[in-house]
Length: 85
Image 1: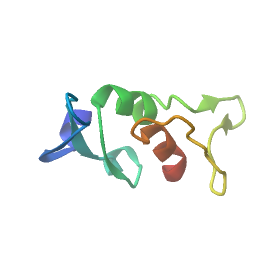
Image 2 (image 1 turned 30 degrees about the horizontal axis):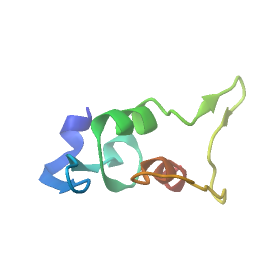
Image 3 (image 1 turned 60 degrees about the vertical axis):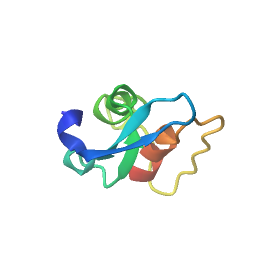
Image 4 (image 1 turned 30 degrees about the vertical axis):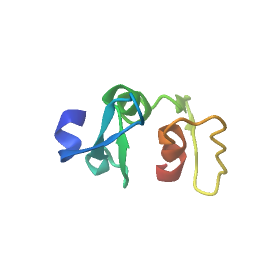
């Protein structure tokens, strides 16, 4: 599914000797965000909801007004999930 959300062939480099990452529009998944990232990380974050823990009543997840600190973030894709929740 993420392959269909790639925005054309727009890419950026992760730095010297790095790899290219693609531009994605995640609105088809219900997230109003566009970002650069890798398909494996974005699938874990947005499709599999890696940082959401479902409970019988509700879930443990980021909510509007919460503060997220992405200490040691690489590309910031993990912090982006709290922005879009």
